[in-house]
Length: 204
Image: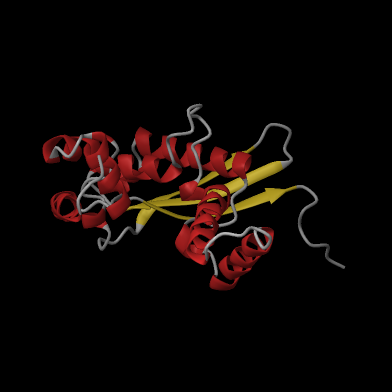
């Protein structure tokens, strides 16, 4: 069943989760608010938005070298306290994120980091691909939006499917949100750098 705007608004106020996440939770719970809250808590999304304005100035920089020594990754994952940064859960996520970057080679951390000119270039490519399709403009734009979602899932670390989940249902951002929910702190995937032998610019 489709979630009504009023139910979505109510669930957002209760949990602080995003609109799309609230819609998905309500659809999964057949419109039952209590079950929807439980659904979001299990995914680590409830209360995540309420922590968004808290400062995350502690954390860890993790390093991963892929077997063979041809690919290396650095990631910075931040949280609010040094205590949380030293926990096994936090360090485990740092390692998982490092391996994700090595394997999936994202270009950006989040969809918000993609420059506007890059997005417009992608949109233009998609529009040209469909230039011969006789469909109404609003339908074509919906198709373009769908292709952009696929672009985000490939190029943005937080939107990528987690490499250790064979089902492809768990996104990297779900892991970050789930950890934040468990520790009760804001957890932020801050930045990463990926190095591959032979890919850097040559120096004289």
